[in-house]
Image (tube, rainbow, N blue to C red):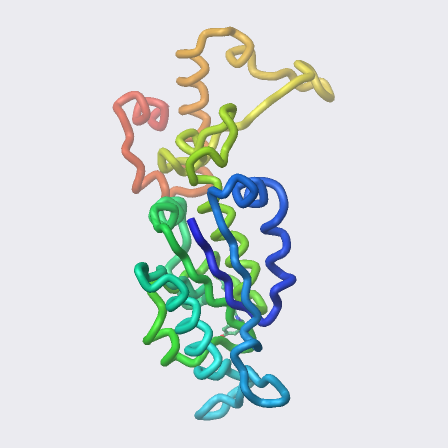
Length: 239
Ligand SMILES: COc1ccc(Cn2ccc3ccc(-c4cc(N)[nH]n4)cc32)cc1
């Protein structure tokens, strides 16, 4: 996968060189190219923003630099068309399903807005996805891009080690994950549930499913409504 990121703060994307996403880049599974939007300005002050029509607080990002940047990036591989992603508070809520969908794409381009956002005509012209990572307002699209790219990168082939699998993810079955434990067996007087030390893999799976169901009912009833529940699941919830 190739991912281009356009931003006025390229340094914000440096964390993509670390850890899981960094390893995916070293392996060639993911290629991240970061671009400074100001490279596509033509005035001496390298202006990327202007006052909003209709008044109101703050500034809006001008369309010309964005259109020049996206046109040049898209033209760099004429045989393909990238999927253009614009993080915004007004976007479709990001989810594991959405990450799985984006992980199928060979080429993503992220437009990191700042100020009060990007001129709407750029979004109309270029955006394939407008994505919100939550109902709170960040100062720009860079952090959202880091979130989206990490969630997508871990789904790419070979990125997660053998010991981990995206198929076992929380949300992969529509529920929250069960509590996890490791050594010591007793810590601050609290013992690891015996079933997890029993060696009975079927019992462990039943326990984890029951814990995930109860946790999801308590914290995210909206997810329970969407999940596919078995008769055994319903028995747990009715208990
Ligand atoms: C009045 O409306 C706005 C006031 C401030 C801003 C700041 N801002 C500029 C670009 C940009 C891109 C993404 C996000 C964002 C995404 C999520 N889930 N939260 N915040 C925020 C962004 C935007 C819109």
